[in-house]
Image 1: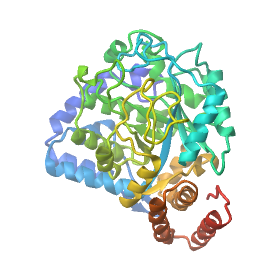
Image 2: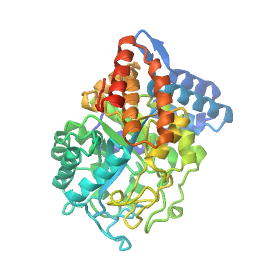
Image 3: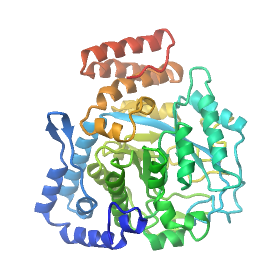
Image 4: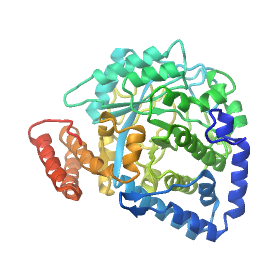
Length: 483
């Protein structure tokens, strides 16, 4: 029985509810009157507190996704752009993954780290190697990392993850510093989530892979991850452990995308209903080729047009949630979806263990990669590209360090007030990147962008203070100003 407030996975991700939702969406995909009402409901509204959006239920959003009328699709894209602009503006937050270990005891059939794969060497970073990786990432200009590790209680226990986090935060190389560590590790206990919280992590990220239970159990035939309920209920345990920023995601291509879409939104609705705050981020990875993995053996792949529509519909349904796209996707694909809802992207990424230290931006070790990286540009090239496209690359971590997380972040975001902090913070962190790491061309483009964008800060006093901070970054070498 479907119950959004239940703490049982099969109740809040209810199979029958999803099937009924898909049937309802198919039945109403040509009901233009209903679709127009749904779009109107989701449109931003001006209030006395700012701009607000109602969002959509999983059933309403599924109707939009099912509709294949080209004119309606254009309206969906236009609304997604409007919502993205209202709450995130032109800012794009930058991050990079850091792979700590590829030891894993699971048998996930889509992941090259599965225990039966003998083609890849197994590797686990020492703390000294973590240090060298962090220095390499800092020298690129990164301030925010997402750490990744396979599930292995012997090789990758929680104590190892905590030691790595401590090491990462401790490294201050030249003007570099990692100011936010997000964590993407296997589902664990409330006690361990409390330990991660105490270690000062940003967002806890865990991809569901698929919400279809039968498919999930086939795709995860053995290992701790085989337990569908334990995995699906992980975010509730994380929040019980005090982590108020959690990140959801499915691996599109494993099962039918409409089913996954509905399940993903139902999970977001569950978190909102039970904990008072939905996911901080939603990621949209697609299955990619890797060692021992051929994505063509999975018959649920989606093309770029459907992928773009999924992103647009997620943005409309959960207007305040950050959306992440990685270097799994090509430059062309990332360009297309940035305006439709994406607010965070990776740059200069390596998906191998120990893939940064000792390698140039052109060299890429492949022996321990989790998946092929489609966008292989350096961070400087990605920053340059974003600015030429009218976006503001942001290395900001201020909200996390000022305590604007969970429901406090969402309360500000829901009335558009978060932009009063985010816009100048983005410009100040971009200025740091330009001074410390950018190529001459990127620096020139960035300086012109900042000079234009700083005038858009509406509060006169805040604008004046931000200009003062920018001058201090350029002329006195000071760093880490924030509102």
